[in-house]
Image 1 (cartoon, rainbow, N blue to C red):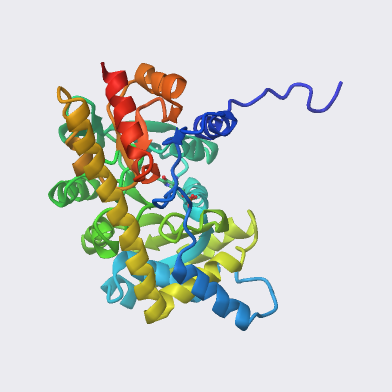
Image 2 (cartoon, helix red, strand yellow):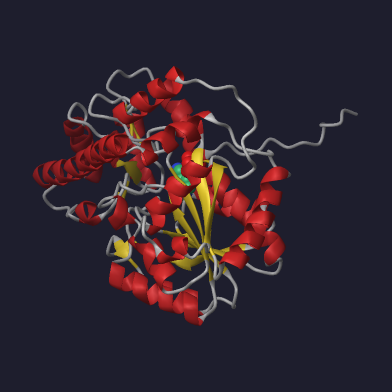
Length: 399
Ligand code: PMP
């Protein structure tokens, strides 16, 4: 029989499946809130002016394309780590931080997972309940057993902080804990800085291995503010891994621009760790592509372009915040018995709306509005043209 005769059909990715369904929907007023992508007020994925300028400049002095080093573009990696830890971070000055270019945040997670798998073959991985749906699959594929720690409290639409602490305290030493450093996906619920302080203490006391995932830096309160957790952990002298992504903050989804950063205890340790991380990369895809990293590096290392980018990022952040305000206001008018004010305290692109699977299905079937069955909506896909329609539809399914 055929070599592949026994291969089973894998289940469809639930969110990508939703996109296909959306595309096939012929209703002209349909709205896709299922995505994890920022759209502007015209409903388009923006091409940032800072990116366009960097690309124009790159084209003007176009160079031949040799291979990049295994770890990628040096100026990109330095830019990425400064953005996380701060330009004058003592850990960087001491040579304890290493960064490698990665294929998006996903690639950074995978390089980190593969590296940890050789370092801590017996470890388990704990992810938040709920988490980005790829976290579990990615760490399982890397060979780890994956469990969850308490996180979201559906009653309060907030953080189950006591539950979270109990879960973390119950983990065996050297368990790997995946933490969303800001703008939690899918809930939009983040711990406060005081709560992060307590989390850091537990991580330290229990000798846990933090893997900070930061895919939305700049979408919460600002570039530095959103990295506060990374800096808090670093200043508490906690060794850690950080996966970061520029997919959203540069609107460069398809360029696969991410980075894996490790904060170690000494320059000597960093040298040895880098040599092993490079081995993981070398045996996977050898070295990263040039274009996306060059664009981001130009922006990060040119003060004028950096300022432009920070302003554009601030514009995206403000627009999302404005949509949160409008959604809450419009739902107050249309569904006065329901309190949606929690949407204002959520951060980043997403909101766990509190809608159940049945209501989400009703939104799709009767109104052509697509959301994830968990009730996650992408606030960044709302705009002045669709928000009234969406608010009215939500009010209808709440009845
Ligand atoms: N982590 C989280 C929490 C995410 O939401 C995402 C993207 N949706 C990623 C990582 C991966 O980012 P990238 O698209 O850059 O691979």
